[in-house]
Length: 254
Image (cartoon, rainbow, N blue to C red; front, side, top):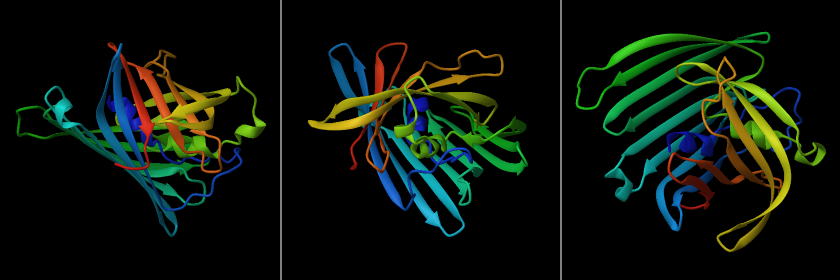
C-alpha cells in the first residue's frame, strides 16, 4: 500500500528535453485508495496532494492515511514533502515522515546538481515498533542524468506532450528513494476511455516499471490513467498485491 500512496502524488520533475504542457499553480488533489479482491472492494485509505507556488520554488506535500478499519491490520500515517526548483522543476530536497505499523521512519535527502550529475545525501532516522531509541544513518546517492524523488515524478509525467508521442514510447529516468537509486521506466500505451464514479473521461494510459542497478524489478508494474484535458491530472492508478489489487481513484474531495 505504501508504494501506492507514493505513486498517487509523485510530483513535478520537468526534463529539459520535454515540452512543458502544463502550467503549475497552487492545487489540491484528493484520492481514495481501494482494495479489491474478487467481489470484495473496500476503501483502505486516502491521500491528499498539495502543490504550493512559493516564489522561486514549488513545494509539493502528500498526506496519506489508512482508514480506521484498516488500522487494525496496518496503521499508516505518511507525510512526504518535495521542494523543487522553479526553473526546471527538479527536486532540491525530499523528506518522508512515516508512522507505519507502530514504527517510525524519517528520510531527508538533500540533492545537489553539477552539470548532468546529481548527488544526494540521505539522512535516515528509524525507530522500531515498541522501542524508544531512534537510530540514524547517512547514505550517499549518485546518478547521471535527470533525477527525481518519490514525490516528484507525476508532475514530470504531466508535462509530457502526449498528443505528439506514439503508443509504445518509453522513457527511463533516475529516482532517489531514502536508501538507493532506482530506475523508473515510463511507458505510454495510448489514449483510452475511462469511467470513474459514473462519469466518462478521455485519458492517456501509462505504466511504470521500477528497477534496481542490476535491472531487477523492485515492484510490480503500476498502470496509470491521466486525464487528457489541459490539467493532465492522474485519475486512476492500479497495481497488484500478493492478494488482490490496489486502486487509487481521484475524487477531488476527502
